[in-house]
Length: 126
Image 1 (tube, rainbow, N blue to C red):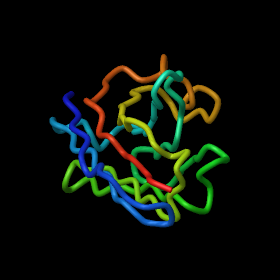
Image 2 (image 1 turned 180 degrees about the vertical axis):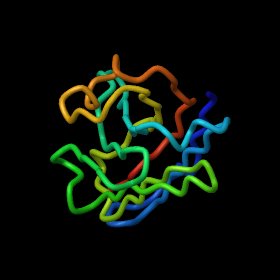
Image 3 (image 1 turned 120 degrees about the vertical axis):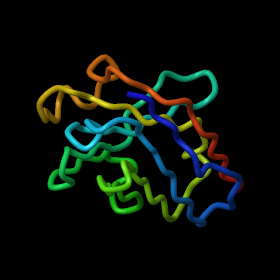
């Protein structure tokens, strides 16, 4: 499986961006997809995840109410709608695919994800 993230850019605080993660292969729609981010000099951290059919989602506390994850399996795409962006959201954002079962503890860890896309830079100016 190959993943390609896009949609990043430079935005002012309070603005919005929508990231897309396009996956290859017929099995993309069978698995959990997560978004992570890594700010300069910091560890990669979990942002949000969605299960195979979109029926379950999970967010880190700092983005709840501002970010929305969704998916369109017909297009092999997972989206991350980011509203009310803050300077602290600045990071490289990565999407990843987890072939394991839905587990809200495990899905927040980078080691649960077997496939990663290249990141897309999000910069929020104050």
